[in-house]
Length: 387
Ligand SMILES: [Mg+2]
Image (tube, rainbow, N blue to C red; front, side):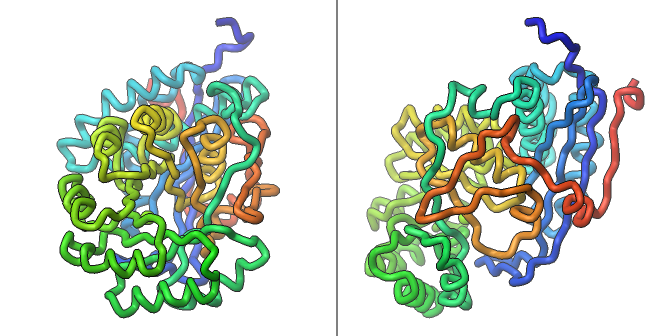
């Protein structure tokens, strides 16, 4: 294909962004005190820049590892390549790096690093063509998507809901896994605040054993919780199947799963109702598109996990714009300086729907001054330096 330019990636830059959270998000396993991301910027020989984001919420030192993985492992395989060869670059990265991840016992960080590069390649491609990424992938199927408000609780549930009243949410998700008594008060508070008509979801962040989750089932049903996310410690499929046999609960999972093969195993099981890949974790847009095809083959809806910054948000909106299997988008309602403040005119939810941007590439424009404000460190990897 002739494009009029060579489309060579001449440099890869990474930036570590970090911002304190005003309301320190509690999880059943550990609090999230800072928002953080590693941003990847790939530049081609004609000066275009594509952006990607690697998820680094946990552990607190994840960014230090990610810088090393990108600098030592990923960038040398990317710089000098032709940017439009997205599938081939993705294949190179997974082929070369997955075996190292297996030996390391760390497939996650490897795929989280690849995710950022893959997102940046799609961003470059869309910008080159002057169209949103969603238009490159089979064309847009919708201009807005259902969205649900995520991350209520465990404390101040009513206040959190009141702060978001203007957005008129129609579905909300609460955090559980803080002990039965507290979980029951979270469910009571959200029902009192949001009313009987709102659709309610819950996320246990892998807090329970099969026995504990079985005991929680009656409570979840009493509060009309439509589905429970990651109920079980370890997220093993055999355990999920046992819980499903015992309770009939509608179970969602996927934010801690990596690659299409693992998703295929879960998608095949009648116990797993909803799949939740995270674009910034599981291997980028390329891998998530494969996961969506797998999910669709088993008629399982995809509700992408999203708990990161502006670039992962934008990429997820592009996915929703072109993949019918994506039915609903997670919208984190907690303080996050690295999401909306980082983008110019970020889409916001209204009455359970969100606009899907149609600008070139990932569809959003980053606010350079805000990126600089939260950048803790930055470094560049040039083609010359790898010979
Ligand atoms: Mg979750």
